[in-house]
Length: 129
Image (cartoon, rainbow, N blue to C red; front, side):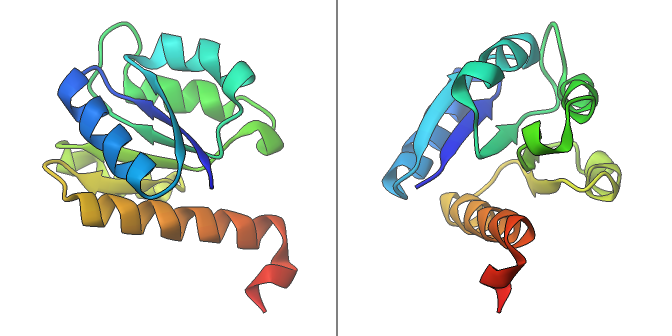
């Protein structure tokens, strides 16, 4: 399946997200904050990023700004996983998905599948037919 990078400073959340996504058949890499995620991206080449907003060193919004500076073909889709529902509209207008914390594993799995399918269809419009 997909290579997914999970970026969250909460170890318990990283564990739950990793377990949920691995049970769905995905390969999962972890980063505890945005700087580590940026450093790992070139090596990992993720198909999708699951991102927390509130983190030390580099928060999720700063990470998104760094990601948006990359060439379009080097920008995987992002699903923001956050309790900051006040940021939901801002995140969506930037073209990213968002799941509110606390979240259900089913909602996470469904949103990941939908996001990956949309990215595949955008990359190859013939798949949408």
